[in-house]
Every structure is written in structure tokens, then in C-alpha cells.
Length: 134
Figure 1 (spheres, rainbow, N blue to C red):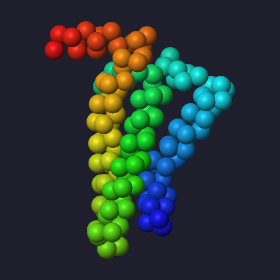
Figure 2 (figure 1 turned 90 degrees about the vertical axis):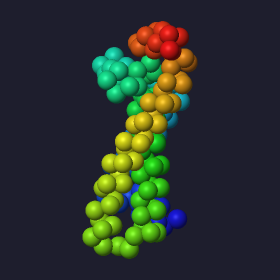
Figure 3 (figure 1 turned 180 degrees about the vertical axis):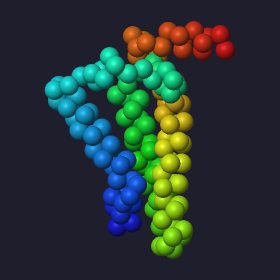
């Protein structure tokens, strides 16, 4: 347990942890009706990232959660396998960047599945047409 807490609060994963805290508080505010889930959709288009068709809050929340879990897991694995030192200090940022890349790909896969639940989102019709044609 101590290893997981150290991994989540150590550099560079503290950035993912802070983002996860923001995501959790955002969804708590949505659950209590203070905010709405589409409040970020007016200004940001995630088509270039391959995550269009769902609200921006959903896509970025998925990205944050996946990046945090993968980053903490990779850092905890490094802590168990690699002794503390220079090699561990170099591998932690590399593992975090790799976790972010893998999280992005996983988020794209999940968004493709979720876009049918949000038919009024921009890109949903375009993606549905593309899915039908192959």
C-alpha cells in the first residue's frame, strides 16, 4: 500500500493524481447538479485526437483515469523490480509518458464504443456513417 501511495504522489505521477482529483470533483459537482456534463463541449473539439463523438468531459475523464491507473501500476512495478537510483529516476518519467500514450489509445477505443450513447454530439453522425461503410 505504501508503494502505491508513494507512486501516486511522487514525480511525475503527481500530475496525473492532481488531474484525477479534478475529474472526481467535477463529476461530484455534476452528480449534485451544480454543473452539467457538457459544460466543456462548446470550446474544444477532440476530432484531431480521435476522441470525437462524446462530450469532452467524458473523453478527458477516461484519459485521466486510464493514465493514472497505468502510471501508478507501472511505477509500482518499477519500484518492485528496479532498485532505487539513477535508473529508476530515468525510468519513472518514461513509464509515465508511456502510460499516457497507452491511456490515449485505450480512451480512443472506449470513445468509439460510447459514441452511440451520445447521438447529438458532433462527429457522432460522421463516425456512424464511417462504421456502416466499413
